Image (tube, rainbow, N blue to C red; front, side, top):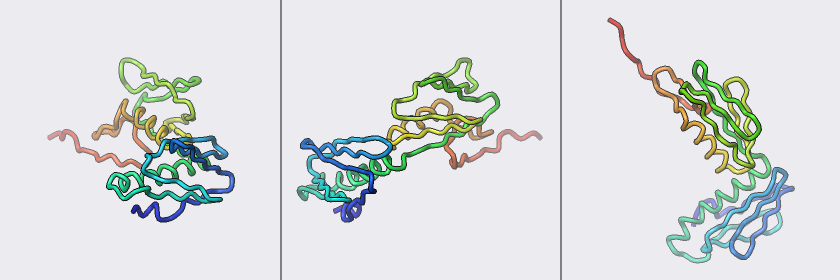
Length: 178
């Protein structure tokens, strides 16, 4: 059995968790509501201010899904109470990002501008060269940040491109003059 599943998941005061018949877990809190379908080999019991996740059988497949289901439920609880955020740093001369409504326009040194639509449920802010992506779904925040970063990954010589805050770019020396 998963170590994560041995302890019940404690719920903060304003969070409600419900499980429907087709194993859909719904978590409601101050920042919104999230729902996810959990595999049928897992049993979820909500008691008061805690959620207990346990296996229905002892199959190998159940063990694989058990820890993942617990982690998803914990992330959903954290998302509806605190939310998640990722910071991207845009580095390079002339590199910038502009937001107009739900459209983000990136100028990354190409001959054209890159346009992307901000997904529903996410909030994106840009201050100078720092882009902050916030939302209550950890997967949506991480996926959108990865898609933005993939447009211009940081290069190893000058470090130009889009990188995560705290990401370390291994630098190369470049050409030497004799």
